[in-house]
Image (tube, rainbow, N blue to C red):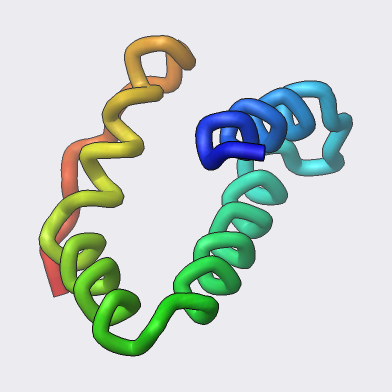
Length: 80
């Protein structure tokens, strides 16, 4: 299975799931998967990706979906 196949499979699985609190449950699962995936990387690669996330890479990935989902955008908060 390729990385693209895995992504499609996971998106299909989540899209078909019935959750009690869909938005919150999906986000919690995504954080868990992201944490697991990052923990599997060698330390230097993990640090590079964590820095990319802190520098806005995750926000750019989220923005890819905002237009398609119909979820209104919330102005960005203060960066800590």
